[in-house]
Length: 328
Image (cartoon, rainbow, N blue to C red):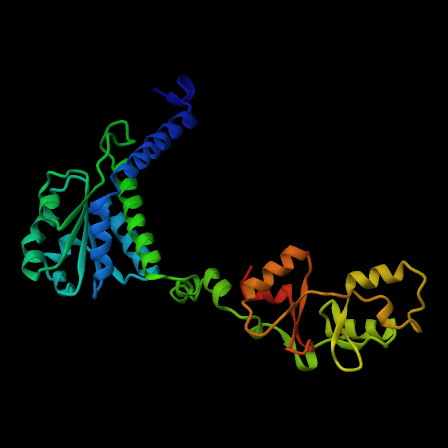
């Protein structure tokens, strides 16, 4: 039977039912954050080795994600496949480590097989189980309750709500540890140096600015036409304007040029100081590129002058430089 043509289904309704089921389970998880969660965090924080996350099937996929989250937020971790662990990979675990095992039933054969070996190593065990009476939960030093009332799957078979709840509990552990360790945004960027986030958090304006011969700069007593030549030559859409002592007085930009040309100024005789934009936005050495971008966005401008402690221009940062660097 062709259900699409004869019995059209409302997929939006079906999708909403899944989301509502899982959202309710996550809400109910808030009632399970208590002494056991506190103890689990204390054990993880005290770990001098690594957090070894393990789980079978869909729980294993959740475990891989959690191991990655722990590692990127200041708690070194890796995922260990429980099946492979019984065939040699258990050697990856040291007595300095701690194990986080995920199992909805709490009786997964591959995990249960590891329990005596973990006890022999005297490695602390934290379980995330949907069955607090299970073998895994009873063997754990701390068992976190991730039980659910129902899977989002109408057959009650496909792990859906159960894996979502386990993931959220794991994220709660990781972020609680992050805050306890005083883990900063720059710490996070150090483990993500290749991505856009790392560039936003680690890159400084000093590395991107135009300086030396590339710096557009003219005197405030220069004529408008002389400024036009400098703007055109340096190709940054602006020039810095300084007084006789080299102190920044303002900038003369493409926008200023357009405004000037609509007014009755003689570009060959009018001093630039009569038409510049004063009180322009500036930056300093050591400022993060992301901070400079925020200034540009706030004031709807495309360039910033980098000045020294005496307000003398040293370089210019253009929006295109941030684009090329991947900061945007």
